[in-house]
Length: 252
Image 1 (cartoon, rainbow, N blue to C red):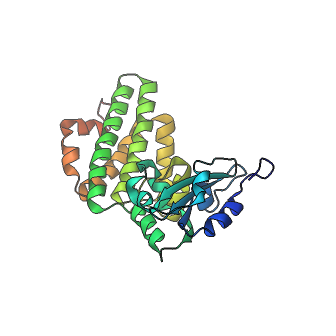
Image 2 (cartoon, rainbow, N blue to C red):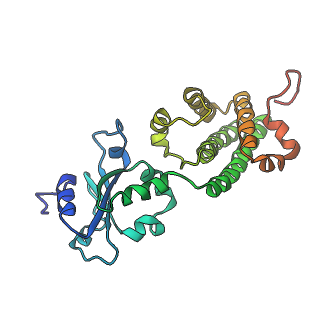
Image 3 (cartoon, one colour):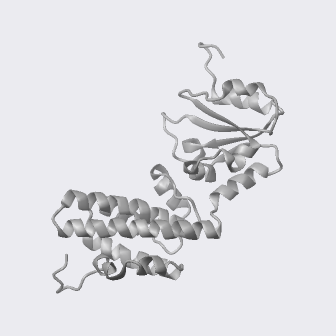
């Protein structure tokens, strides 16, 4: 394309679909999420080519413009070898534009959308501990009069909490941009979406200790029921600081 005729999404899709080396086209990002497109949204497109195939499309590798960003990968790379972990959610909710593998591209995306049981359990263990750590620090900092530190730790704890809740459901956590979109369409089992989002919002903004403790009570029960008691019990008596306090207790 010339400078006067920039490469557009529609034009490129026609070019790629006519190339027999291309086995799949996958659109990710805002364009793959209904209702999320803005005037600033571009098209983020994966171009999957057959392993060892020859194609002139490599000349477009790394193409970036206001309308179109391209990632050109082999099928093997697309199946996992070339996919960084932070792409997982994007691929889980990506939209298939072309699949010449009789559903093979769709199966790859389905694999990315679902954590296997062992992976989910390990991830849940890790982020549960991180959540407890940030919560504990927030409550301690509040107790000691460090208001900014308490709020920052509370905000950190919400990041780990969301990773935990999605891992418990064997799903990759959505990017912050898509959190409300995801929960509106695919709620977390056992959680009221509106209540959860209000709690995350308020805790992130204020670090409110009583609300953090109330939420931890629910999370603790859910985590124990899912088999993660060992992580929690390792905190010993420090758990008491994370739980709701008696009305007559002097501990804030």
